Length: 349
Image 1 (cartoon, one colour):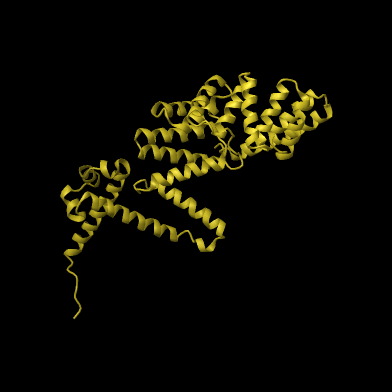
Image 2: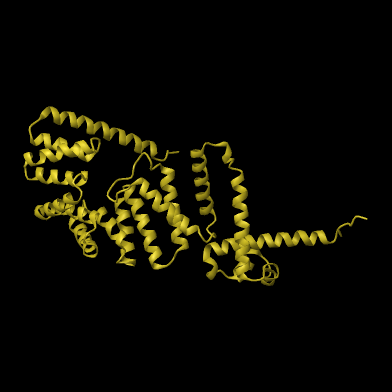
């Protein structure tokens, strides 16, 4: 004979389900804001509008409640992934869709213990793609407005989840780099200086700050780079950055010495060859610049800085036709870059 449920127990069961769900939602928010160590059961009970004893009755302890929150959230993400229909997409599009989905899900669920690690990997990877060199500008073809906004969201979440001094300094470094890449130099420099106040030994913060201030304050840039070079005397990028800065300051002999040392290490480094060419042109030594300009044009024929140096070289060599040819190429590339920046900019309502 089939058993029948007691109708009187069904409302109690529904009430229990609602209470547990309310507790899980409240606990998720509490853990997201304060972490496992800082979360308080009293606040969870208040958020869920339940008696604290009910939390212990359903979940046992705060650690068990944290585990239940994670299990619930992971179940949600697996269920949500099913709606992506990845098997209907090409492999490349499927990976892109899954990556975008995963990033968004972690942003929306900071209670995941690995969320800070995901943000760190995303920021480092994305910043490297946008600007592989610390002194390069953000690639307008890759830096769409939505992507930059995601970088800022990732930094904001990192700073909210990681409140220690070292982690805060790291977050400010990322923020400063993004701001510099957006041509918000003053804001970027401020963020990088804040990072150094928190952690004076932060190597990357001092390096990016030196690059950010080099044009307007080469003396400050040289001071930062000399500090870094004292720590890592064989660091190639720092030596090159210092050589460029010395050239800006008119310390041509120091710049020449470092660049010659670097050229002995990497004879075909376009950046080194370009700086050596500019040093020769600064001194009016057109003949010395000739093989350098020729070689760097062979290596990087479409680089705007190289084209500008080539135009300068032909001006000093009194080759008006060549000057005009390079001028047109530079203007064409600048117009194309402007179009890319405009297409990447957010549309106005």
